[in-house]
Length: 210
Image (cartoon, rainbow, N blue to C red; front, side, top):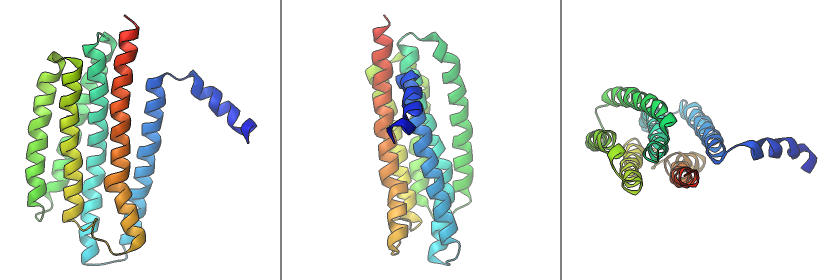
């Protein structure tokens, strides 16, 4: 078994901390994608109550990429503030993707009329994103990370509100309930912990180069 893993371990040892975290993000969000697909397939055979769950999974499939992009924006902002000019173009690219994904998410949400609480969440997220975009490059690294953390915290709360209002947290089926719990709580919290850790590592790497 050890011999089988040796090539993979050797390859990982060549990666920088940033690339290792990026790989972990890809793996986890791939798992999220599989889980979303599994939930959609399973609930297609049910009616009424489950139709709301279908709405929830569709809306969440637009929200997950938005959270991921915002986490990337946090790390890139740390790089730029720390003096890494090569990160500026990537930061602008991610900003453009966030704007596009925000529009896509709002378009998906606008098709549903039964989520007033989520509509209020969206307003708060949009306002916080505009503040984050306009101010974080002029902040200290600590304040910039804190501002991003606040924005992502609002997104994670919005994720929970969507799950509540679309029955994803109320499913009596044990398997569905566990899968939905992974989708709306466990995996998002894991990726956010990793994102915060990545931002701190990026800062340490930048400082070590000075």
